[in-house]
Amino acid sequence: MRWITSVICLLLMSFPEHLLAQATRHTAAVELIGHRGPIFYATYSPDGRTIATAGNDSTIVIHTGDGEFVRSIEAQQGVLFSVQFNHDGTRVVAAGQARIFKAWRVATGITTNHLPRDDMRPTFASYSHDSQYLAGADFDGNIILWRGFEGIFVRKYAGHKGKITTVTFSPDGTRLLTGGQDGYRIWDVQTGDLVRHVTDSLTMPHAFYSHDGRMIVTNNAIDTSAVI
Image (cartoon, rainbow, N blue to C red; front, side, top):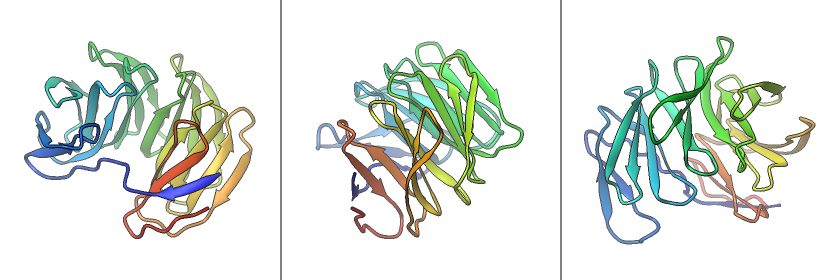
């Protein structure tokens, strides 16, 4: 597995105007409206036609891929730390301060999954590429796996120490990649076994698989060193 470091996550914290660089066009930036405070996470849908942002105003805002406002979804009380689309862009899932993982239909804003975890302080949630699974992580190094749309508990992964800031599945759905203050870990989705652990000293790390699953792209707020 090859690891490459790069800035890949759109963390937009300007207030009150938020600018999102249109990476697909490599040209101008557009203004994203709708939030009442800083944005902590922004992401494109898999087909690039929709943008979702989440921030400290308990709101998810949906825009077209060109930055046109579509709707706001009042999510929950407290800060939202992440938002992710499912495989076909019809749902979003968020993790936030209110000790809950929650998912909604993009077209209507109706809640589809409501997964309270009083024993967790959620930081990140992500669907597998076929939406069969949903994974959530927290400030204390815990990772939970559910059946995607049903929200049925599957297993808990243990091993991280401290805050987890990224959770993502491999394209084939067999591996779960998690990253936190103590480095990155790759897990076998079916068995829950730890496949690999890469130790690093990181601040706010994020990581994603390449489309073919052969590379992992990472970034952090400290350096840009590559891990092979």
